[in-house]
Length: 210
Image (cartoon, rainbow, N blue to C red; front, side, top):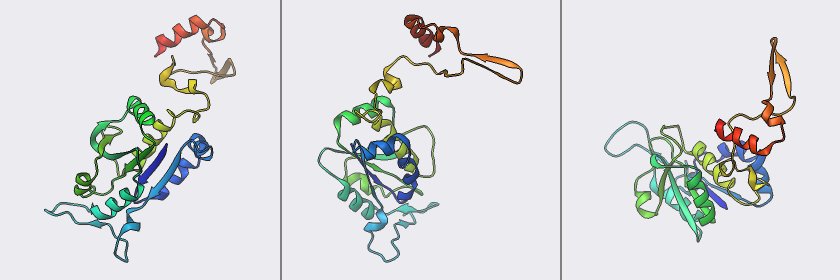
């Protein structure tokens, strides 16, 4: 999977992509990430892309043409374009799995300020997607959420496909060593069933805890 991110703040992704599973996935060539800053596609020496909205109103709107040019450069055969919007379709694991299986290129357009000139959506076929019923400062954090969720669906990214919590019986409560410890005079122990070695009983316990 090749992720193409249209963003005014490409450096916002460096820390997350430089750690843990996504970093390893990039190094192992399981995923690829390319960043496109609309400022690099402007024709003014100040690289300005934000302007006051027609019709009045607070804030600034991102110009259409720099975003259009960035998308055009990112676009490949077998691409899907996602336009991040709090009014979009709710993103979930089912959506992530579908995208991972169907597409090789995912272009994610990250908005900022009061949004992006609506004419961009008239030129490209894009799907509005939301990661939750709230509004945040920009699309970079939702883009990271989407990349993470989709990457986990790709063969080899997690190492063991059984690590996908959504495909197995799991519990919100997990335990590891030691079997018991004390804190402020009170003893805390691992549930006996998890130490029993009885796989059927353990699975039943997990189902009840879901």
